[in-house]
Length: 60
Image (cartoon, rainbow, N blue to C red; front, top):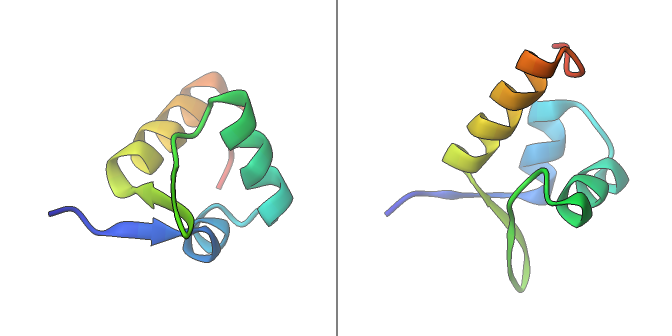
């Protein structure tokens, strides 16, 4: 079973605020599920990063 990431872990990986993550969730850009708190699959996060990197709007 794939380990799910917490909101805090995702903010640290992407180096953005929680508010920004909520915007990505609301817009449908980043998939998340709510199990008590927001959880993110590593695969979905990788796809999100790849899509942002290819669009030129995400730099690390």
